[in-house]
Image (cartoon, rainbow, N blue to C red; front, side, top):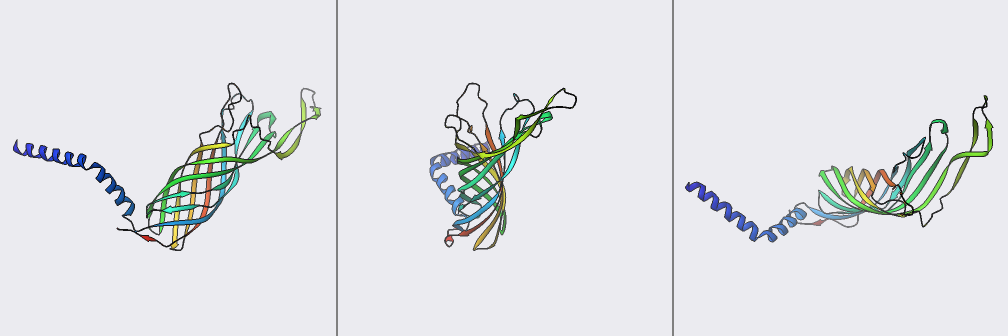
Length: 259
């Protein structure tokens, strides 16, 4: 009974001390995490890669229609603040394509419209690293985007080229190709985009003078790319996968911190 009482008193004392000094413990923990490793450093670099975008929407009301993802490009200037060996904060101002097409299928195969859309994006992310010279890392963040330009191309039926089939039971259309600049409609098009991102990558540091990075990122928009301009409107969201290669250089020498 005596030992139980002593343990109970010890627990109470610990709880009291943790509560009384909770603010100091919190700040000391943050200080330890941010300064436990050897340095902080700012990097600037160049990044290039490919994008694969898919338009997420409901097309169940469109007969014989399918949405297809398409490849595009992405170029950026990454800016990274490496707090220590296991955490960094980064922004990658970039120009990226988010392309997709709406295709007719079944007896309408060959009819399609492809949309090549170019966005200016500003992501803000945090990465967590594991390893030494070769590091794997995971990234989580959010991004803002602006729909800069659009191009649409495809094939549509030419109504002036109607011919009947051999048995006379149907009609046949010749397809006419088109390629034109997308005309924005301020009432319909929402050119601002916001969303979240996540991804994984590998970083290789052959020397202290530069870093090589291969990264795969997934961007998910949470804003409809249309304004609310009609009743019973079906939302549309961009889902984009990026595969990129980066080369980064430090802007200044390492800042030593306590270990």
